[in-house]
Amino acid sequence: MSSANHHTHTRSLFSNKFGYILAAAASAIGLGNLWRFPYLAAKYGGGTFLITYIVLVLTLGFTLSITENSLGRKTGKSAILAFREFGKKYTFIGVLVSVIPMIIFPYYSVIGGWVLKYFATYARGGHASAIEDGFFGSFISSTAEPLIWTAIFLAFVFMVVAFGVNRGIEKSNRVMMPLLLVLLIAISIYGLFLPGAIDGLKYFLIPDFSKFSPALVLAAMGQMFYSLSLAMGILITYGSYLDKKEDLEKSVAQVDMLDTVVSILAGLMIIPAVFAVAGPENLGAGPSLMFITLPKVFNHMGAPDLVGSAFFLLVFFAAATSAISLLETIVSIFCDATKMSRKKALAIIACISVALAVPSSLGYGIWANFKILGMQVLDFMDFISNSLLMPIAAFLTCVFVGWIIGAKAIHDEITLSSRFKTQKTYRIMVKYVAPILVLLILASSMLSAFGLLSL
Ligand code: TRP
Image 1 (cartoon, rainbow, N blue to C red):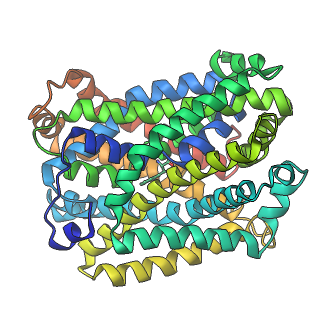
Image 2: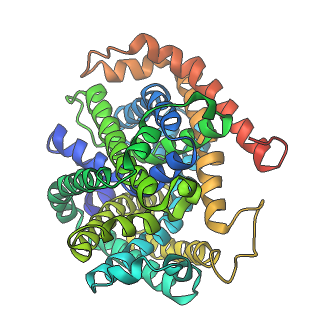
């Protein structure tokens, strides 16, 4: 996706299926897999969460990803224009999905800033300070420092998108992504040898259905939307770049699978280590899990500074490629919809991002008392996007496809290049199961947010 392509509205097709899969996977694999998945799995019953998550990906997740990719490839357009192809009155669905990345991007960059801070700490040989009590807490609750790291992260991402060096990023992906996998596997294996880790492994892999709860399903579903980047226009855009000859069904399945494998590896890396070094009582630690537990694991290793810097560099890389793809989506939506220049769009988006990132960061410090529905700003933005807007957007997309244009429209697109083995289930999923499921989830998350239901 080079800048020139957005300008002229011609579509650059990926050179081959591998190019598509690599780009889509680099966009999907990010903080969602490495940071968000392990802390949710740890918090919500380990194996029970894992099983629920996998079932959701195979059913709802796959249905939605293939739907969005097909809409994109069929129309050759990004979200807003893709929906408008079918009639002006559907434009609003495109607009709704387009708002979501704008909410995610700023707080994503705040976490990206934390990752950079950890990288810098290890690169300077600070493994001992990284495990001091309160290191993480005092960092995120200070005022200026997290903001500076967030600014560096944002500056990097904006620079890449502004100068259109995405091609270079795609090339380095080819090296960095496999490296990340290797490191994840190596750290997991190391962690598994720590005394007590096997209990953690059991907790993560063996479901205990007494832990099953509506809150767990909600969390797993929100995580799935987040990790697969569903219901926010991104897959429509990616689909529009996919060649008509490529096997759409298989490509989508492979991307979803890769993303899920990385999440599972991240869980394997973190959860047994939590048991071993921090004890199971720390499972509910939440967003801090990666930043507090892992440094302790690194400290048991031979060269903690080296492992720590390598690890956080690769996490930074995964986060940056996702953030770049988020920003690219936002820019292309802005440009498609308003015909403004890329430069102007970038300037406006930069202002909005800073305006939303600052409160997300300060919510951990001097603004900690400012709560919306009992949530800190960052949690609130996460909630609004993943638990409110994404299910609404997913519901509208399913109704649009299942009941308005008809599953046949998607079927015709997919069978251009695939046998579409799952077509019978697909129709039932998109027409009945998915919208009902999403609606139930939406209702329960709203009720619980307003305190009408305790999950
Ligand atoms: N899926 C990404 C992750 O797991 C995060 C993400 C959400 C994203 N929406 C996106 C990335 C849109 C790119 C584009 O970290």
